[in-house]
Image (cartoon, rainbow, N blue to C red; front, side, top):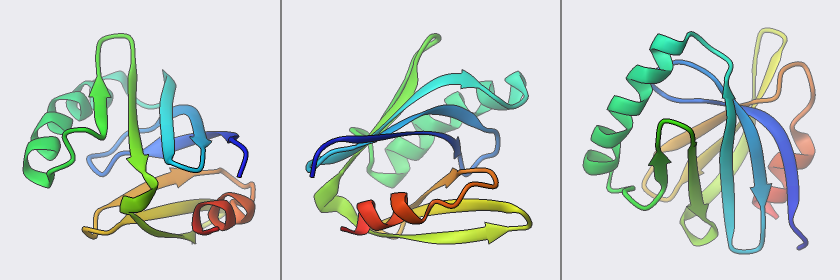
Length: 121
């Protein structure tokens, strides 16, 4: 598969919203945050809790977070699958890892069907 890229919102489990680019390749899913699209204080808290998640969840290689950059990489072999979820009018793609952890991407009112199919493909 050729690389595909979506502009999408990542919803960290601790709250907040980071708008960025999700790029799918044969080997990995790469999210790079472009800007904080939620309350800045919430994102500051996310940065603090990501370190704890990385240590407790065993995903130290997934996340990187600096004052100017936030992102993560999900290796394809570690991805169990993806599914669509609808919350009101908002549609989401939920990526589940082999260890049961999830990564939620909100696509607004747009349908993430193609994204989910490519992740599962």
